[in-house]
Image (cartoon, rainbow, N blue to C red; front, side):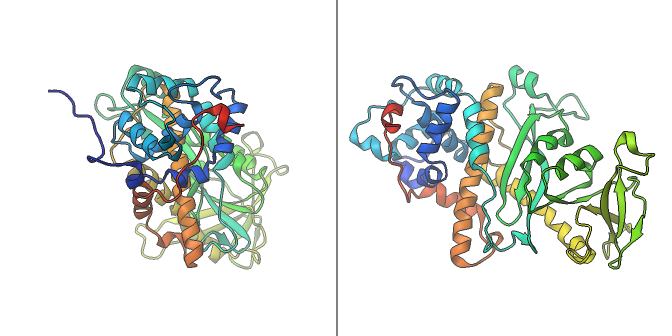
Length: 403
């Protein structure tokens, strides 16, 4: 029995489903062309699918993970304003789309992601701040990819109690801006790479004025020291067996301690000064002691009780990952690219589309003077899919568009 090609409903146009204008405003053509030029991927001659059109196509793909490649391309091209003037771009076949994506590769998509996707909250953004610090959280997750030998060799399969896992997986680690759910600084690798290893690259995206929250599985002297080098402040939970000597008790019940590297654990000098906060949650059974360490040594600047309550904000990244993996990508849907480089391309396209939607939601929250958390991500995705509010207007020719 022949497989039915997934398609949008009869008579559908991009104006009914996707606001490519929202994406183009977040990732303007000038920026796309700048990145393509810098990475040597600018189209040198007119093709059926010029490089800058392929970039927007990749973002459109992530909005319709269950729709066929050709159908997404058809709807994308129908909705681009310059096409009505007779641009002559053809709706190429699946192999032509794959060739165009392969020519582009993942490097320019990742570079565009890294140069644009950053925290967007300002002083008026509700929920984005604790006192003078911008709240961010460090965490990671996994995604399944298409099941083939190339992806398995590049990314591996997770362990399974019986046999082998159904799909290869990528692992990624991100920072999230708590108030806006913007995921930034993201790095990915195969599923056998630990989150702590990936975090070594991610923490370089921390900046002064941020307060970074993280779970106990990230805590280690080397990663802590690297994160401190970014000049951000940290509030991380530590494992139960971590050695944290009590050097001085403070008025708010916390105490000063010192962290040593593996080679320094028996020394009394050259450690990193930290403040430790211990507490339990009422009603928890068995009674579990939480231990947090922070770079904020002054209890007046950040009292222990406030920091203990603040740590629960770490779960904001779980909500952001759920938006990405369940509501945008779709539950139980794999990244469908068949080669490792196109998997990376598709993944960063997904991250950029999430960023564009979150940017739209942030603007709406500011206008309404409300916390972005009160807005529905699912509703925002539907709006972006259904309504073209700001049509894209640029030439299909890379040469003309950069003129």
